[in-house]
Image (cartoon, rainbow over all chains, first blue to last red; front, side, top):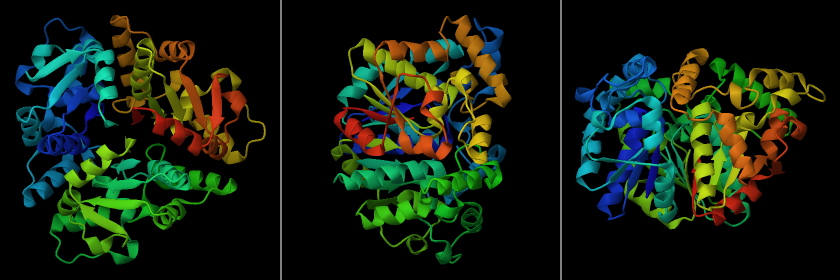
Amino acid sequence: MNLLMFSGEYDKALAALILANSAREIEVEVTMFFAFWGLCLLRDPEKMTMENKTSYEKMFSMMTPKGPGELPLSKMDFSGIGKSMLIEMMEDDDTPELIAFLNGAVKKGVRFYVCKLSMEIMGLKEEELIPEIEVVDAKTYLKDALESNMQLFI
Amino acid sequence: MNLLMFSGEYDKALAALILANSAREIEVEVTMFFAFWGLCLLRDPEKMTMENKTSYEKMFSMMTPKGPGELPLSKMDFSGIGKSMLIEMMEDDDTPELIAFLNGAVKKGVRFYVCKLSMEIMGLKEEELIPEIEVVDAKTYLKDALESNMQLFI
Amino acid sequence: MNLLMFSGEYDKALAALILANSAREIEVEVTMFFAFWGLCLLRDPEKMTMENKTSYEKMFSMMTPKGPGELPLSKMDFSGIGKSMLIEMMEDDDTPELIAFLNGAVKKGVRFYVCKLSMEIMGLKEEELIPEIEVVDAKTYLKDALESNMQLFI
C-alpha cells in the first residue's frame, strides 16, 4: 500500500496512520510519501531551525503546523476548539492520539518517504524532521506506487 | 472498485456516487467505506437519537450534517448559497439530486461499509444510519480495497 | 496512471502535474480526468464566453477561477497572499510555475479527459477550455481508470 500524504490535517493523518498500522498488522508493505502540507506531520517541534532560510522560508516555518500536535482538522476546526473536542471524544473512547499512531507506524516498519522538491520549496531541512525519513524525488515515489496494489492520495 | 468516503461534502459525495452508479452499470463490483465525516452522508435525519450519548457526542450530533441534504460544498458553499445555486443548475440540466444517486447505489447493489472506530468516536449509533450498511473495522476495509483493481480516497 | 482532478486548487494541481510529467518521463501512460472544480484548471482566460448561458451559469463562470493562474491554494491562501508567497518561494528555488507543468504535460502526451456532466452542469463550453481536451462520460473514465495500475482522486 502506498499513501501520498498531501494535506497535513489532523483527521486525515489519523485515518492514514490507522490504515498504515492496520496494514502492517496483516503484513502488507506500506510506504507513506509526504509532500507539501503533509510534511508538517513529520516536523519535530524541538528541532526547528532558522539557519540558512530566506525570510519567506522563516515566515513559512512559523506559520505552518510544527508536528502532529499542531495539525488542524480538515473541517469544523474552529481555531482548535473542534479539534480539542474530537481529541476528548477519542479519549473517552480509549483511542490513542495521532502521535501514538505515528510512533506505531515507525515501529511497525512503515517506509517514510519525503518529497525532495517540497522540502526545497518550503525550505525545510532534513534535520528538522523525524529521523526515520528518506528524502526522495517524484520518480522514486511513482515507482513505489506503481508496484503497490493500492494507492491513495490523502 | 473501492471508494473510501472520508470528506462528507455534497460535491465529493455526488462525484463518488455517480462513479459508483456508473461502475455498477458496467458490472463492476463496488464497495464504499464510510469513515469520519463521510458518515454524515448515511445519517437518516428522521432517526436521530440522543440516548446513551455523552454531552460531546450530543453536541457533535447536532453540529454535523444530518444526511445527504445537509452536506456542504467542499468550496464556494457560502453558508449554503453556493450549494443552492449548484442544485438549481443541476435541475436546469435534469441531473438528479444527491439522494437519488444514493438510492440508486443502494438499489444497484453497492456495498456500504461503515468504519466501526469512527462510529464509536463520533458516538453515532447504527440505528441512526440508513439500514443497508454493514459496520466493519479498518482491516476488513483494507482486505476489500487490496483485492479491488481501483481505490480512491474521497 | 489515472488522476481524477476534482479539486481545482493550485497546490493540488501542481502536485498532480509534477506526477504526470514525471510519469511520462519514465514512459508511463497518463490520463487526467477533470471533473467539477478541476475544470477550472483547463479554462483559457482569453476564451471566456457568456453566450447561451443561463444567469446562474454566467454567475458561476465569473465567480470560479479562470485558468491555472487564478486557482487558490487548498490552505493558507489568505485571499491570494499565501499563494503569492508560495510562488515566490518556488521562484527562489527555480521551480517553474503551474502553467509550465500544464504545458509540459500537454507536450509529453498526457491524455486530458473532461467530464461531460460537469461541463453541462457548470455551463462551460468546450471552446472555453484548452484545445487538447476530449469530452467523455463517467464510464469512459472508469474504463480507463480500471485498466491503469494506479489511480488517485486529487
